[in-house]
Length: 357
Image (cartoon, rainbow, N blue to C red; front, side, top):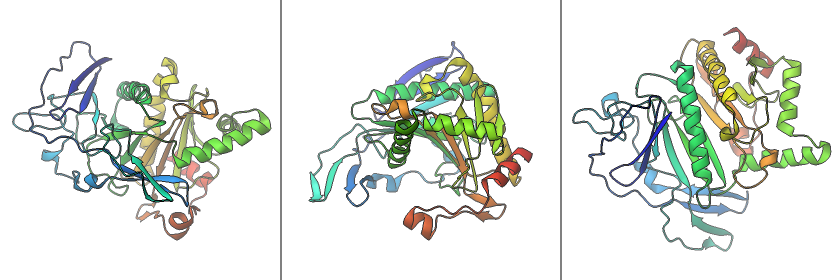
């Protein structure tokens, strides 16, 4: 894989990840762009012990443009996009409308004595999987999935080294039902200046388990699911995809390596090669459930950058809000108000349907 780094017209970084070593990426960004916005503002919620990002500049971000105006397609002729080259394999660049960035502005110390404020220090990047606007991740080749995984490993290492970054989160949103604002196949990476609430909860549970048993909680849960087999959808030598026994979403699958590793960079070559065929098979099963493109979120759970790395176990959480061909799962009162999920489909039934898809 060849890695080429350039600067866009407004100073943001862009990196090409090419599958051929003879590709030359010297096309300049010919747009006239304003300077990138400053970092968002983080406000502390004392009632939940959580940070909330206020990023007002994102209100004007690009929203579902037609295909001939897509900012993630290559630049061709007189049409200039975020990617200056006329074609590409995988490309990563700083988000033009970031929730978090390194461009820190002065902030007040607090809004009230209970609500301190801090800059939204971090970074948000966009990952384009292909230059084909009409493709999807499920239609990529296993070789391209390996390139994407290598790019995510590269970016996880680079973002983890940034000052103030505590957690790196790669993810993909697919489908307007999920809330995507660009149709082109892409994902994102958030580098947070704190350990996220979901990860804190998972680490607390893992710590209690380790103190009680000496084991790694996720590794032990994965071993139990593999031994049971009832909720396993598919597996190979290095990975297992299974529906969690207490799945929150109608169709939710964890894709986990058999070897406990903290993050994507820690995967070896064999594990990286084995991921693509299994994950592509799983995505096609999702699309086959109702014979239509399945809206989903694919979320990589990685260990924090600096703390509790021994408690983590890398895994990909893939889930959809679609519960039937013509029905979506909305986060209503119990889920949104109290955080208590109510699942309409038994996890065992979801696994059965996915195996048959």
